[in-house]
Image 1: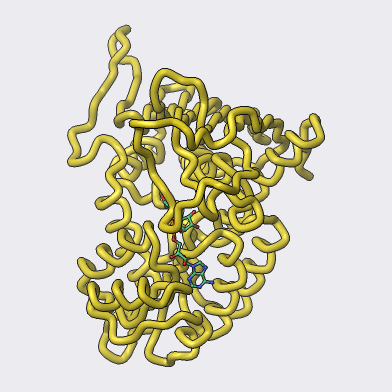
Image 2: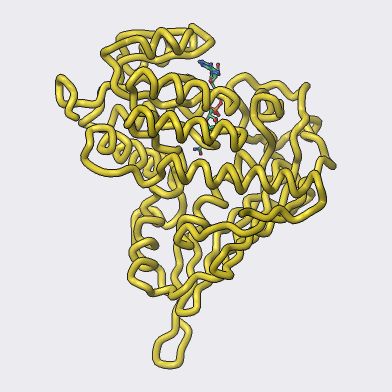
Amino acid sequence: MATENGKLRVGVIGAGSISGLHLEAYKRCPDAEIVAICDLNGERAQAAADKYGAARAYTDYRELLADPGIDAVSVCTWNNTHAEISIAALEAGKHVLCEKPMTRTVEDAERVVEAVRRSGKVLQVGFVRRYAGSVDVLKRFIDAGELGEIYYAKASCLRRLGNPGGWFSDKERSGGGPLIDLGVHIIDICWYLMGRPKVVSVSGNTYNRLGNRAHIQNLSFYKAADYDASRNDVEDAANAVIRFENGASLMVDVSFTLHAAKDELYIKLYGDKGGAEVEPALLVMSEKHDAIINATPQIDHASFDATEAFGREIAHFVNSGLGRCETLSPVEDGLEVTRMLSAVYESAASGKEIRFD
Ligand SMILES: NC(=O)c1ccc[n+]([C@@H]2O[C@H](COP(=O)([O-])OP(=O)(O)OC[C@H]3O[C@@H](n4cnc5c(N)ncnc54)[C@H](O)[C@@H]3O)[C@@H](O)[C@H]2O)c1
């Protein structure tokens, strides 16, 4: 599967905020070469091409995909284009690293799964938390049975002020608010560390109570490349309980805005032999000689570090594209997480628990 020069030749589609972390990581990766960049905004594409030494800049992703000198693409565009661009890329014979959420709907996710199967190419879903060094360490503890059976997980990602505006708050382009944007990460990382148990039911609530609070002054927050606060039809908070076939359960809550004292991020797992916290920092709980032990693995980044995690995610994608390993975040997992997210929205809209077959 090695390419002509032994490197994976990469194109990046979408040159907004997150693309910088992809491009920096490709630049650091000795087995990758950045060949082309595409953005609807031609100046943005050209600026990134100049900065990262890409030979070509495009405004139409189809032109980029027609380039036989590209082996793989990162899809870093609005959520509503992920399925269309990923499928076209796979059909053009490219490997795909698709940013989260993989798609807005289950139907789209199923179409992407089909396209991966037809093409035989790699599609890695951008579940970047799976690639964090702290998660790699914790996975080794879990695989060695040190937590026993994980029967409960709890995760919370609350922003008191942080609706990124622009396409993020336009439901048509994003598919939803903090649930699909932030919930996707914390649901996925818990599900992955729990051993990807089969979902039996989902119950959720969404709230559109506070709007985007664009009037708040003197407090800065993450914004889309084309920030615009005038349109906002996504939820501002959501919560959910997900039940699994093995009896385990997962509780999550997320917000773009909430009357909370401060932002909060935690990810906690509880097993019958031990427990663990992934955030705010890696910690492993157990018992020894009739005493409770809270153990702190000594590692470079005890909390999520974006540079480290994107570096590891992209190195893994490059290795998968070069045929050296299987991706750690395959398309089937993208589909299952999309099912869970869609079920939370469905449950919130209907006021009922959604059962999976
Ligand atoms: N993994 C993470 O932690 C993480 C963090 C932020 C964003 N993301 C994801 O990355 C994606 C992009 O988010 P962002 O924050 O960079 O948004 P952004 O608005 O800053 O950038 C998106 C860019 O995509 C371009 N674009 C949109 N449709 C396009 C098309 N059809 N062809 C070419 N270019 C197109 C836009 O012009 C814009 O420059 C989203 O799916 C988002 O969910 C992931």
